[in-house]
Image (cartoon, rainbow, N blue to C red; front, side):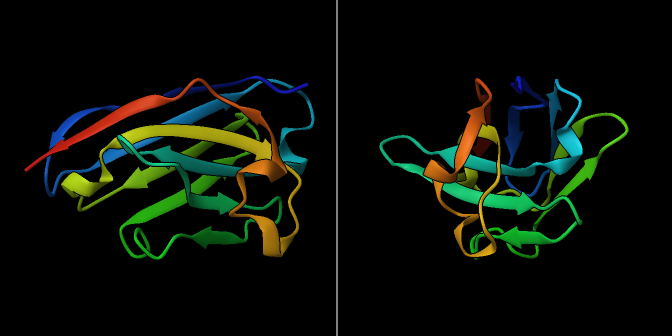
Length: 124
């Protein structure tokens, strides 16, 4: 069983940066693939980034070069550093944990544990 709690969301202007954190409970955190998804108003939940237990990272094309996912296994925490934010990044951001294969890291159904979400709003 894993419980996930996100923090770090807020209201920022275009071009600003934010860092989201996701604190996880459980002793096996280091073995999970950790990911961030987001749900924009009126849209489906969409993949943002993922990081494997070896540190391999995966990004959606829309955030590549602007967002960085990282993890600190000693702190049971995964981060999402978001730079050069755009209004289209406005969404509720969710942390997720699971065991997807490499080809399935973008699929919501591959993750068994989810946080409650944190709102990110980027004004133009």
